[in-house]
Structure formats: C-alpha cells, structure tokens
Image (cartoon, rainbow, N blue to C red; front, side, top):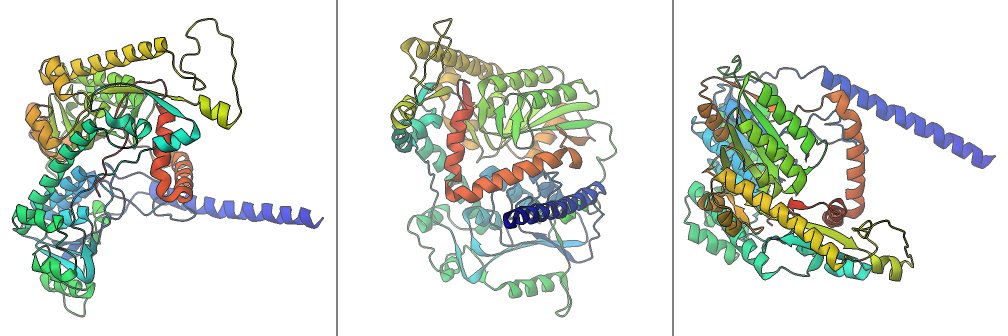
Length: 588
C-alpha cells in the first residue's frame, strides 16, 4: 500500500509539473502571437551588440525563445539578416550615436563574421563611433572588434592571437575495435569527407588542400586586422608565430588594443561620447530589440517589385526541410513559387551548406536552372557552399562569395558500413536469408560488398560525378575537363575560387541583392524571404521535441557530441551517393 501511494503522489506531481510547463508555453505562444511592440529609441542612445548565440541566417521564429527552463528553450537569438539590417538602420538613426561591441563568444563561421564586420565598417562612414570591449577576445570576436574606433581589454584579460589550427577527428581506430568497416566508393583525389572513417590521419592530398585553404583564410584574417589597426601584416604573423602576445600589457604594446580598462570605465567613456551626465543612466537599445524600432528609410517598402531571397541552409536531403536543413521538396516548391510569381523580378539564392544527397542536390539544381531561364538568379554564398552546396549554386547567372567562404569540393562518394565482425565476433549474432535475385541483398550491413557490387556502386558514383562536373561546366561556361582539374573534391576559399572561375565576385548579401536589382532593371523593390518560416503554432511541436532531444544528447555526451554527429552521419548516408563535406571547417 505504501508503494501504491508513492506512485500516486509521483503521478500527481508529474501532472502538476506538466501543467506548469504548459502554462509557460501558452504564455510564450500568446506573447508571440500578439506581435512585438514597437521599440522607442531615446535620444543620444547607443546600439548594444553582444553576440552570444549561434548566428543563423534568419532569426528563428521559436515560440520557446527566451524560456530557458528545463532545456526547452533558449535566450532569444538574432539572425544574420536582422543583424545586418539593424546596423544599417542605426547608421541613419539620429537617436543612435554609436555602437558598443560588448564581450561576445561568437559561434559563427568566418563569412558570417565578415558580413557583420563589413556592416560595421559601413556604419562608421556615418561618422558615428564604435567602442569594443572584452575580458577575452576570441579570434573571431577580435577580428570583428578590430574595426572599432577604440578596442579595450580588461586589465586581467587576454587576446587569442596564436594562428589558425584546423582539427579533424579520425574514428577508424574506434570503428576497428567495434568490428565496423566503412566501405567507401568515391571520385575525387581530394574528396576527404570519408577519411575520418578509413584513415587514422590526413592523407597527403588532404593535407595539401587543408594547408592551402587554411593559409588563404589566415592571410585574409591578418590582412583585415592589419588594415583596421594600421599594423604591418608580416608583423602580425610574427606576433602569432612567436606567441608574442602573452600578457595584457603586450596587446597594448603591440597595438592590438588601445587600452586596458574595466567595464565601468568603458561606460564612463560611452557617457562622455553621448553627452550623458555622470549621474544619469546611459541610454541604450539591444541589437535584438532594435529590430522593432521604427524604420529610418522607407524608400523600398511600398514597391510592388520584389526580389526573392531564397534561403538554402544546412545539409541537403530529399523531402521536406526546415530553417536548418535543405529539403529538396521544400526548396523546389519555394523556387517554383518565385518563378511563377510575376511580382518577383529576380532571385537571390543564399547558400550556406556543406552539401548532402547528390540526388536531392540535382533536383534543386534543376529548379534553379528553370528559374534562371525566366528571371535573374544570383547566388550569395555564406560560410560554406561546398559540394552539393556548390552543385545547387552553379546554375545561377552570377555567384557572390566572401573571401573566407569555403566552397568547391566538387566530388561524389558513397559509404556503406560492413558490421559483420561486430555482429558475428562481438555480439554472436548471425544472419541468413533467401533471395530471388543475385543482388537482392546488395547493401546489407552484415557482410562486405562483393567485387561485382562494388563495381556497380562505383559506376553509379562515377555517373554522379560526371553529371556534377557537367552541370558546373555548363553553368560556369567552362570545359568539363577544366572543371575536373579543379574539382576532384578539392576545397577552395572564396578568394581562391574567384581566381579559378568558380565564383564571379567577392561581396556581401547586399551586393548580391544590388546585382539582382541591376539585372532586373529595378530602382525600387522589396526583398521577400522564402521559404516562409513556420508560424508560432505550427513550429511549437517541432521546437519542443527537437530542443529537448538535442539538449539531452549534448548534455550526456559533452565534448563527444561532435563525434556522435559524425557517426550518425554515416547511417544517414548509407547507399545514397553524397556530394558533401562531411566534417565542418573549424578554425581554433
């Protein structure tokens, strides 16, 4: 009986907790459905920027945003689109006197950082100031902050300035111990996506290409800082190579920062710059809240002409997608919609993807090509537009990339795990079957591929590579032989891609939009986003389940979460030819 009451009380407690959670969720839904109130910006204000969240392409329409309880939600994030729009708006807002870049542990790719950095440089043309401060400057945040009029460091703080390091985690040793062999069929000398599963270190070809593109990224990084800070680039290279910057005083001595100050001293300087009295509060508006401030430029808002901004973010797969994955069905529908809409005069395809299914990539490529026949299509590349990401981009009229975009990787591969040793030797599990055809069980994971089966798969991959390189050759007006020579799975930066003809220009999202407007001969226009983001009610279920599941796995695995993602990726790629960069380019 005592045990019975325990279960009853536990059940009641669970019901109460569920109602409490439901109450907060409903509050969030009602608040979101009610819309955001217009933010009033006081005179002599500063725009406060602190980038602590992962920067997506678009601000997520998350009904649980800001509800950081039980791992169901997170603090409100802001997307790149709104970040750039808000900095541009602040440039002409008479109430905004300057920007305060506060400590930011940025989680964004280098091209995303480049977009924001260029927006800040443009902001300075208004004559307004930018002040940056941090206790710790990561490589990414220092690159962003280096454009500020004054860069300050906490007296006990530090600046990461020791060069770039690109790590790759290799899993072959662990897979061998488990009795799992990853069978690889590929085309491309440099197609290194499969290396973590079949090697214990980088191949010579991969080391060559990583050295090349990391060197290109680093050169651009140092060049940007050198220009902003007025320091010789070669000197910066030596500072990093010799680890010259070790103590807070070193960063002042070598002019990486302008001074060592505590935050209260920064606030005092901001008050002085805005004419705020010592005893008065500093007026400021947060970057995210500023989205709801009144527009300062309405020239393009009333135009019936539209430029469609079609977002293609994440890995490419068949079927439906969302804000973080590219589903061929979802993106194809969006492209067909803008193609048939007479109000849409041009299309900007924003690609930020490592690739994925080669079949899904080809489906999307077809829609891009059809759209190009009836209206201008311009591609704007984000942090990465590699492999399948480049496949869907190559049919455009023109391609824009940032100097530090990672692109190329024109190659195809397929993987199939052979778990025979795991099943037979480790687990004592055996299999038997009856089949009506010789190849009916081709692709079974309980045995290795036969020579005939491997030859069949190799032919499929070869055909996929031929189609890929032909699509690129046709789109870029090159010979297929030339594309093969710069293809073979090789990764390039945007700067390198410009030299070899894989992109047309280096520039921002806004540059791509202006190019689209010029091609469509538009002076006034509106930019409309596609695919449409899910509304609050429709996204509730997916947001809740995804947040709980992902947070639980991350909490359990900790630093090993990235390895889990790689292993999971193998299961998702079984038997389907892939055009992708499997591991991301992380510079530490």
